Image (cartoon, rainbow over all chains, first blue to last red; front, side, top):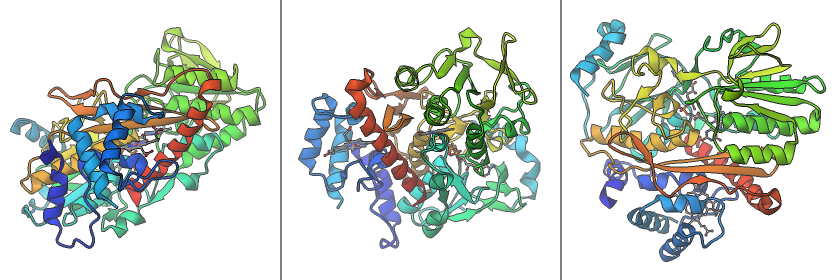
Length: 98
Length: 430
Ligand SMILES: Cc1cc2nc3c(=O)[nH]c(=O)nc-3n(C[C@H](O)[C@H](O)[C@H](O)COP(=O)(O)OP(=O)(O)OC[C@H]3O[C@@H](n4cnc5c(N)ncnc54)[C@H](O)[C@@H]3O)c2cc1C
């Protein structure tokens, strides 16, 4: 799972002859977040920045979205759509970017 | 996929095959040529994603219009909340990323020679082809509704050069006091399931201020629609009795229009006179996907649910509204989300890597019901062996309830919708 979801990233990396040009490759699974939180989770308008989000805090808040124990307009409908493994990848990825 | 189907695909469009140059050698692990037809939600997203993720791959984008005008937020022009330049996007950002943008129309595809014939006559060779040309309108499916009729009863369902949405806006501004705005809404499947109902809301939002005794008659070929409860709550809360929605089982299906006399004629022969008519005509995949034999008899293109490769031809991946991918909606967000999987699958193959095997396809459609009044539908989808499926116990619509309790939620969703628009258009064009 992890390996396959990261194929885009790995392949991107192996092709990078000129790394200065490339932005950090994003795991495919995190691409779905870019439509609201910005391409690298940098935030957009009223939607929060999630780049650099602490990993444990991310996992905790995801659980709160999942079980509807945190006020939300939309993340409570998004969060249950991802498996535990996928949430780990998301947490690692967003924690890793500045 | 059998050789036979690839051959029959070739035969259908074969005329140009012989005249084309031999296929280029595949330059595995070094570089290759990704060609993209259509610079909209699917195509622009694919081009940008490919340049960022696979910088050694040459990317060529073929698009006839010099700029892209989004359908999303077009309804806000009708509502008086946006102007055309705010939903018009330049391809300069993609050019700056190294995408070769050809302002031309793809006229034919040769899947054997692996080449796209442009309307200008030139051929563009590819190793992998992404096709995201959007929809075409079935002219004549509603009797009397053709391209000339669309200059009187606009559809405003494709961005194009912006003239359709501009015409509809001008007609609304010129509506006589207490006049009637008619909409004809098609059966499924069609582009943007909540779009007609957001449009009704935005027209009502404008008329409530500019022409409060006007009426909106929405004739629908269907008995139900996306986010129906939320829309109908909104209409009752914000617009009183301005809006009447006529479902298919109450003779809502419009089968003929008479533009000279400004009439909508229903299935059972009822004539409705309208001052402004918006005909959202029945649809199929854009011509380039049908004329080349990629589409099946439904008019849409069947694809592999993990790679978006067309069933009818190898190395051609069809994304966006043109494909058949139910229950994925025909939305901009789905075109954007699936474009990335399609590119990753197409280019992985080119370099001998396995394609991503557990992709997730993501959708959110926000709708504006009025000022500071937004709501949404979410879907998280995955491929299955048969096609596509929604992930259980996820997604769904915004909560329903009295506005007194939900005003803050609606206000927040309207502001998040604006953020979505800015974020996704940056993910396409920046
Ligand atoms: C009123 C309205 C509101 C909407 N609101 C939303 C919303 O809020 N959220 C959402 O997610 N979706 C929304 N949509 C849906 C969204 O617009 C479509 O789903 C999306 O545009 C599909 O992307 P696409 O790439 O398939 O097609 P398009 O975005 O239409 O792009 C296709 C491009 O291909 C070009 N093209 C066509 N034929 C050729 C050819 N032969 N050669 C070269 N280029 C060609 C066209 O010029 C066009 O630029 C809305 C639609 C409408 C009508």
